[in-house]
Amino acid sequence: MPAVLPNFNATSLSSATGAQLKFWVNQTNAAAGQKVLVKLGKVNDLWQRPAMHHHLNLMAALLAVTAAPPSPLSTLDIQNHQ
Image (cartoon, rainbow, N blue to C red; front, side):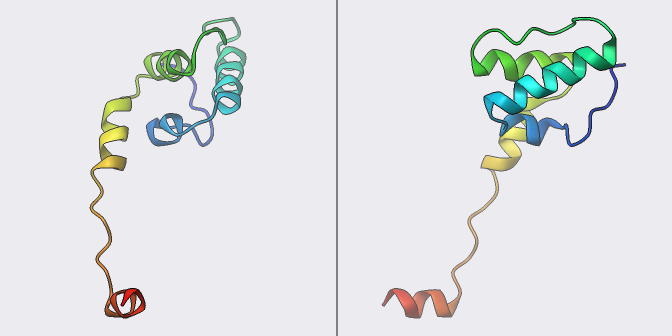
């Protein structure tokens, strides 16, 4: 099992920038003591490689973020829009 990185989970990975993804690739390689991931490719590749290496389910994280219902409008919000 790969080493656990701080602040690294499927939710943070799915919303990470290219710089964050490259940082996690570096951290993964350092923890493994060898080059197990590369920093080349598109952002989608940089999402998938660490997820596969750390056995994370990105689809579940993306669905959890997009499936959140919208917050209900309060009466104050409705009055402000009138």
